[in-house]
Structures are given as C-alpha cells and as structure tokens.
Length: 254
Image 1 (cartoon, rainbow, N blue to C red):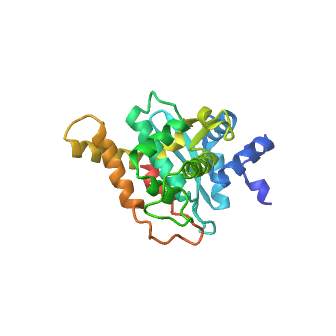
Image 2 (image 1 turned 45 degrees about the vertical axis):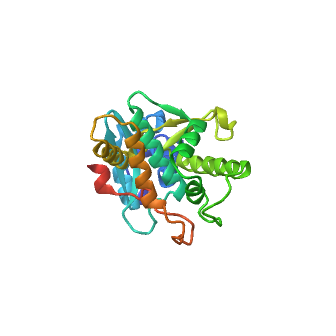
Image 3 (image 1 turned 135 degrees about the vertical axis):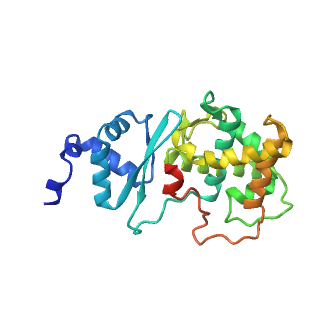
C-alpha cells in the first residue's frame, strides 16, 4: 500500500506532520521562527523531500546568510503558482528595500505607521491609491482627503496581512492592533524580494556616483516602481491581481 512505502518517520508525530503539510501547501514558508516545524524539516529533510516528491512537489530549502527557510514548488502543473496581490507585491518590494537600506543584519522590525509615512513621502498619492485599490475608479487629480488617507491605510493593512499570511513578515502585537502600535517584523522569506531590492539600491548608487544610499537611492526606487505601476490605464487581470513572487526554482536555488 501507498502508506507502507512512505517514510515512517513522518508519522511519528501526526499532528506536527499535519501542520507542516498544511502550512506548505497553503504557500507558507517554514523558518526557524516556527521551531518545531523547522526542526522536523531540517532533521528529516530527505524523508520530507521524498514525501512531497510523491505528491508532485519539490521541497525548496533556501539559505541566505545565516537564515534558512523552506517552501514548496508544484511539479505537476495542476496547481497555479502562488501569487501575491498587486499591493502586497508592492509592499514586499518596499519593505525588503527598507530593511536592506537600513542594514538588514541589525534591523528586525519597523512600525507600520512609519512605512505608511515613508510611502506617502516617496510616491504620488494617486499612484499609491491605484496600487492598493486596483479595482477602484481613479482620478489623476483625486483630492487627498482625510477619508481617502484612511482608506489607503486600511488597504495597506490588508496587503500587510497578505504578506504575513505567507510568512514574509510577522505582525505584532496583532494584525488588528491600533495602527500606531503595529510593528512589522521581517521573516527570512522576505529575502525572496532581496535580489530586486539589491538591484534597486545598485541603480541608486550608479545614479549618485557615490557609495552612500541617500536620496538618490530613494529616487531610483521610485523611478523603478513608477515604471511598473505608473500607468493607471493598464487593465487588471480578471482576479484583480498582478503576479507577485511566482516560484522561480532556478533563481531561489542560486
């Protein structure tokens, strides 16, 4: 029978095994901040790889620096690659750039309100509205009312929750906490955005002609985002989403 041919070690702790399988199949990443799941994957890696290979997945283990995380890539084509919404992708790029620019080894968190203010000072308000609410009707000269700013903040919160759902970030003390108290903690999987972030920073360095990462770096980032999302007339996909970090096995294994 099928079960007799699968590694028996996976059934020694059925509850823990079930949590690992469900998390990975939902598209989540498993890292050291989930100690029990992470340790089981690390200690019994070949057994888990064999198990998921049978189910039609490849278990990817990625290490950058001292941080390691694992996730699944479908090998059957029966499941669509994981997709992040337009706003969540935007925030993932921005957060990875923020942490990289601050020195990622020493910075573990940032306030949601701080990121909100940073976005408002970096990008045109109407561009942000079009990114975080792609299905809405937008005007190039929409008045920046208090109501519109409140909507923007709420849309951002929804997109941050999406990043947290896949464990790119962790939100503390809770996703429903008062906006001023919300802290965004980077998780290892946020590194999947880092190659893009490094490219943006490098463009800023080249533009400025110096080693610092001051205003030229921010300007380079804004220019790149404008090129991606600058046209408000681009039609949306039927599901209202733009491809996020679709699984790229070759890039993540490099």
